[in-house]
Image (cartoon, rainbow, N blue to C red; front, side, top):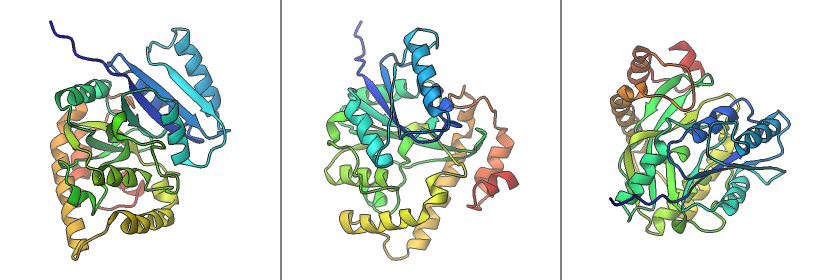
Length: 303
């Protein structure tokens, strides 16, 4: 009987003062059914209890008390920001396949990495494999599901439709350093545009791979000015920019994505890796199809 190869998968997590969300992140990696994973966490010198959490979890795993075979490698030291932390984690990693989830994000269920590795094996030409995204509230309730299309370089030049936690990359497609540290918000978008420009091949798998947690201190709430600056630079460096009729095109894309996301709702029945909270499907359908306000988390609370 032919055996399937089991390449090492390295999961990179930058973290700074995220003790509230870090346990769910760690759990979502630790529970994975795939047998060869390393989880590398680079903490920026947190003082909120994150260091004790990492120290305790790493010791429990090393002693075989945590019920997980996934080794946890971590450091806590000052850094130059999120991109620098990811680059340090990448440098310390050894995996042939690289995943990147921030400390307030997580994988959707415990079979994500197993399915991703199988997809890489089935499509050896693929350099990046990505899936759909679940946006969740602070308590782990699913707000709605972000369906993503098959890869289009033209569409990527208009909008970053690949959420950072949903993607996995072959190490052979990446450079050292992995991220451009001059970007402090759109570093993932810059990476996708750079890989696409180099001719790397992207492939979507039709499953939810990760969650994006909407919480009050996330960058999307506190650093919108930095996002605008980063996107302006990407237009100059990578040709990223909206064509004429951008508002209509943008509205059409997000309408399409929201409607298609409704088809993913039956998949939330599976055991979730990031939360014990169960989201009523009726509430999820209502938010998915009829709740269009974009003020988070107010929209979730009002729905």
